Image (cartoon, rainbow, N blue to C red; front, side):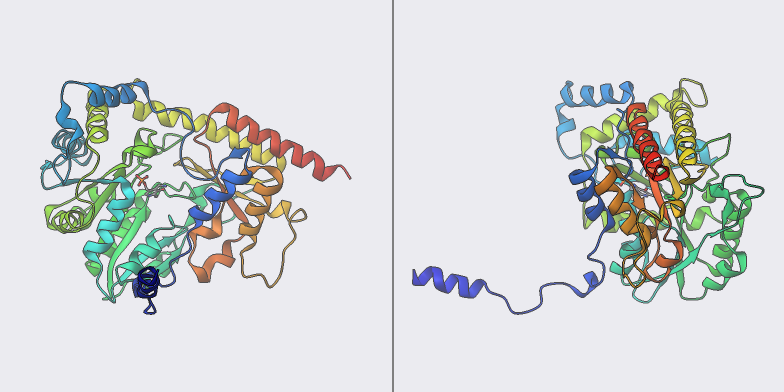
Length: 437
Ligand code: PMP
């Protein structure tokens, strides 16, 4: 017994255990809202993943890889990317970018786009470096910059009122060129670009990308280009890769995700494409953190890309079919929200849609001095009282800008028709209850 007692005394630690780099970044919107959705929601349009299956050809490729003759697919593969996958990615992106890519040095596979982002910030950002982030932004950019010792510098997209009663579009949210230019200085190491953008669905125009590119070249700044929604663009819009603009290939890392590309977010296969001068440092980070990614999933994604290369631009291509299907879902949700007065901002891309909740303020009154932004309280109230899960837009802003954009919520429309219909039923019923005394 005395032995046990002395062990427990020894086990008690008084020194602080948390590394300084974790200070202030403990909270995470997804941990909080995924739990709320699991507890209360009947219809979950919160977190960004499809509730429909990946295409059959991809599932079959996975099954073949899993139960085929080649048992080596159950073992480690090359750390920087399974050879068949990096080869096909080099071919595919080489074609898109119009340049010869070396699979071994211009491509690296990661555990989802998330790890690709982590590698970039760890590899490029030093203590004191500034990284420009365009708001609203995929929330992990900020803590990842901070963990690397850097300082995030935020610049918001500013909404312009649409003309004559039309619905707002994500294209109405624009950078102020002078404001953007004012954020660049000799301390700036990188800018994070996310086009098509989560959460707004904005697809940056050529003009907007040229503005960013010119500033990157002028100030010798890197561009971390998160293009996970590259195939999800609507209404004939074009996704332009900033790396294809003059002076940008040398300073850009392109980040992609098989999760978003093939509707298989749980596989967590991602990649980076860029010049060896940059990728060599991503390899250093990768080899000292994750190093190997799941072989079977990489093999299946490689076969998916092989098929897409053969069908490139053809109607059977998944990269043509997926946006076509999602555009219909977008239009459906736009109509459904518009009909109840939750004004949608029509997204040009991604599978997200941001809607204005101002007309619903009577249901969830404002608490003037609350620390929590209004949209966050609204989204929590909505999931608890209506069973409908969405994400508050303020979660995609830095602390000091959250309250400027606190009357919007984000919906994910990569969902089965039945799910979207169930969401519509909730909204319609809510609207009826609102109008009847
Ligand atoms: N970037 C953006 C903009 C995203 O929306 C996401 C996923 N929600 C990621 C990166 C991470 O992608 P993955 O699941 O491939 O890690």
